Amino acid sequence: DHRDLHLSLRRQRQMCIRDSIKEIWAEYHQGRADAAARTLEETQATLLVDRAQAAPLQLHPVRRGEGHFLLLSQFQHRKHFLFTFLEDYKKNPALARPWLTMTLHNDLVKDRGLVLVRGDVEKELAKNEAEFLIDQCVQSYCVLSRFSAPSGPLTFNQEPKKFDLDGMMRGYPLMKNR
Image 1 (cartoon, rainbow, N blue to C red):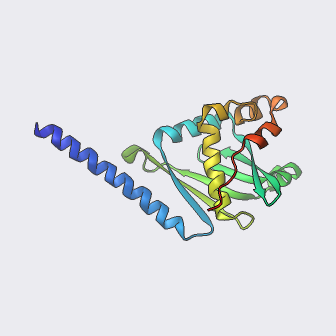
Image 2 (spheres, rainbow, N blue to C red):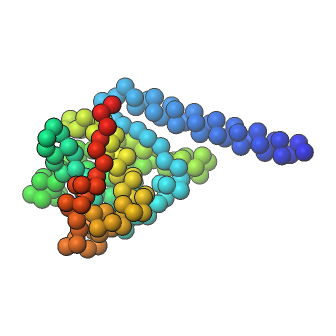
Image 3 (tube, rainbow, N blue to C red):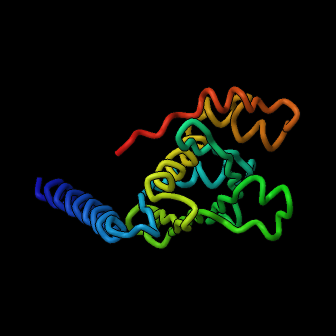
């Protein structure tokens, strides 16, 4: 039936447009040291936002050489994750400058079911560290076993005394050298 064929072609065209958007977004940011990019499907982005609203703070270790430091991500205004150096945040939360700002751009959700994610990277972080942090931030909220673990964002926000920092450090994936 030609209606089925028409619907199939339209669906295929929509997928091609979505793939093109993802490709253009990635290519635009590829050569930039100060910005990282990825895309999220609408369902994943919705889950991320809903869970981050419920648990807006999360710790992220950044390993360098034999050591590490901690960044604190704060979710704000249903679209921004600000990653600040934990020691700066402890001294004065209002003055803690973000080392990475991850922004969710949802302009294409209605028509394309896509959310464009951009990470603005400050000089304290390498771009590959920022890309890794963005991926891990998404995972820590979207993978239920990580979100609700004693070392996850839900515990960190709702029962901080039970938060397992050692468990988070042990369980946090290692960044692959690219």
